[in-house]
Length: 94
Image (cartoon, rainbow, N blue to C red):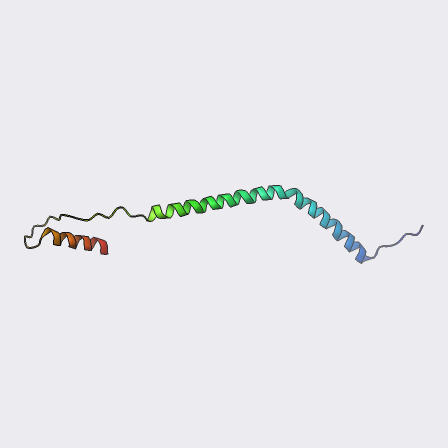
């Protein structure tokens, strides 16, 4: 029987195939856990986005704007309506 020596190119090819097969088996075994973590993290991210979207209007909502129907002043020359308009204008500009 004749023994045949393997050249370096054939050895590298066989080595790479064996290494790829081992890596493929390892990745296939880890895939269910990876998929579970990905789905969980995606769900947590979506929940955070929904909470932020819901919180923004609540934080930016202003309390109901009240008009002032009556203003008390010690000057007789101006009517209550003029003072009320002035106060409402000053409060809404600033």
